[in-house]
Image (cartoon, rainbow, N blue to C red; front, top):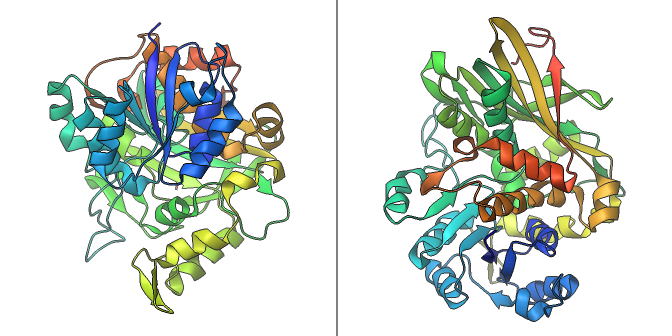
Length: 421
C-alpha cells in the first residue's frame, strides 16, 4: 500500500472530518492542514494528537496558512511538502484556483464540489449558462498528458450518489433509463430557528441558482425555477414521505456524462418550507449577493454577513439529532423486466457525534474523500485525466466502506409506483 502525502486545503466542518477520519489510516504519511485561518488549522492539529505511530501531530499533521484564491500559493505549499495529492475541502468558489495550483505542482487532485455555474444571462429558468464543472472538464487532456489524476465530486453528493449509480449500472441493471438523487430524513438541530447543516455560502449558491435537469428527449440539459416540482418522496428506515424540491447539483451533470444512454436525471432535496422561506427572503432583500457593499465605510459582501450571523455548522454537532439519508433512485430494466431501486446511505446525528465527535453532515461528506484516498493508496483506483466517480470501479470503494462499518443499503422499489416529477 502506498503511503500518501496529502495537502488538505480547508479545515472547516468537512476538512476537520477528513483529517480526523484519516488520523489512524495506515496509508497516510502526512496531511498538511492548510487554511486561511491558521488558528483553526492549529486547533484541528491539536485535536489530532500523534497518530498510530506516535508521531507528533506537528510532524504528521503540519498546519499551514494558505490563501485558496491564489493558485501560486497552493502550488508553493504542495511543492514545499512534496505532496502526492491535493484534497480540496474549501468553498466551491475556490475550485479553479486550487485545481490549477495542484496541476502546476505536479500533484493529483480530489474535490467534493466542482467549479461553479453561472446562470444564462437572458433565460436563466429555461436554459443553462455556464454549467457546474465547465471550468474543469475541458482540462482533461492537459491532466492526462501530464500523467496526473483529478477526481471531481467525491463527497457524499456528489460522490457516493455517483458511486451508487456506477454500482447500479455494473450489478443491478442491464439498462438504466433514469437516475434521481433524493436527499432527506428527519435530521434537525435543536434550539435553532434557522441553521444550515453545511456552509451557508454553499447552501445559498446551490439552492438559489436555477436547478439543472437532464432530459434527453428535450435535447439534454435545461433549467427551471428554484424549489420547483415538489415531490413527496418515500424515504426508507421508517421515515416515510418527505417533500423534496429541485436544487442545482453536480449529479445532474455527472450522471449523464458517466452513464451512457441516460434519459433523465434530477436532484431534489428535502429543505422544508421554513428553510425555503428564509432563503427566499434573503434573496428578495439582496442578502444572498456576493458583491461587496459599503457599510459605514467598510466593504462587505452581504452573503459573508449572513455567514457571520447564522450558527456555525462546525459548532452544532452535539445538537444534531435524527437521520440524514442520501441516495440514488435508479429506474431501468433487468432481464427484460422493469426494475427500480433506491441505493442510500444513512447517518444518524447522535451516532456520528458519539463515535467520531463530528456533526452528521460533516461526517457524511468527509468519509468519502477518505475512502477515495484509501482506494487510491491500495492501487485499486488510478489513471490520468479529469475523471468523475462514474468513471471508476465502485466495488473497491464500497468494500472499503464495509471494512469501516459505514452504512449503505439497496432498497427495491415497485416499478411505476412513484413517477418522478
